[in-house]
Image (cartoon, rainbow, N blue to C red; front, side, top):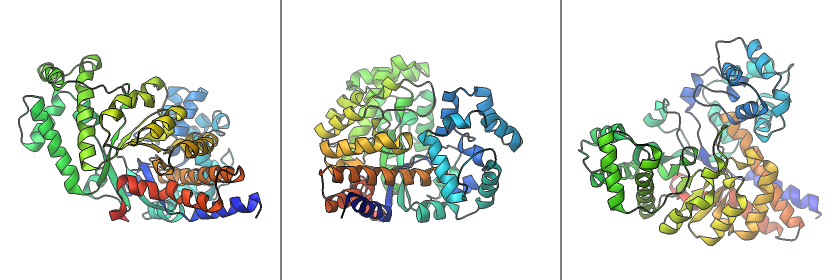
Length: 433
């Protein structure tokens, strides 16, 4: 067999793998069915802008025009007029490639331009029917199970009944880490308790963990505080944290600079409990979605004190820490409790993802790398991202095979681990499959 034949074997094997999707923000299908879904929805939604939308702003689109792009009361023609000058400038980004793949594969629109966008809109609206999620995510994308990080607070359908083939992670960012007195009072009332000191607050945290365990659908925790603060969670003595807690209860709220020791202490407490219960902790590192964020706040090396303080807790560092991939690889190589999750990364840059996956496979044990998490709010994005992730895995393994770094059977085995087996092991998902 020549190199081309080997690559075809790898591609075919990768295509057949049923995926474990380690990270999604998908709204429930019932909420999605209530939206006015069209091509412009892929850029700007009622809750958040999306990644290709952020590219429009980076290219120079004004905030006012970008907001208008998501205004469903405007005529479609007007929204296209706003988009038309900027679409050619962003269409080559990987985020835009996701949209182009979705248009091509799902709606049979080969390219998005001035003559095709109306057809795309029409076909999207026509396809917006019950069962769309199953057809796109489970049948076409081949996703067996997705880990949902719920961020759309108005999506009560997820609380009533978990979507099929879905499990969840729990966030404590704005409840038990970055909180104010009103939050404390709300959780105290929820559990019928009185909170007068830090020990009382920690007792409520234990009750929250009991609830997570009893519900049975939570497989880990998620921290996305890199959007709001540096990831430097230092070890803080309980006495100091208690004094800050008392001050917060008296004042109602504190500035971050004054609150940070308490936040740091609480995340260490949460990480310790997660380790005892076998719940991995997912942490956003690297590039943040949206403009204007401080990239240095999300550097993975800032997490080193937390990682070393909790050797029994599995820390799953997200997005390949793009653009800090080298540092992430060293962390995963040097610490048995650090795992690499490439979720979102193939949609940021497929070329860099392919290159760094090969580098990581040469420096990090293969069981510590997970290669796919869709990280989208709408199902077409998750589908197209799955296509990019499969191409990244088959491309990286094909490159290594041609370089003599591994054999064909090793490549096929590694592909299964990267796209399925590692996530099952890390998050203990066997009971859901």
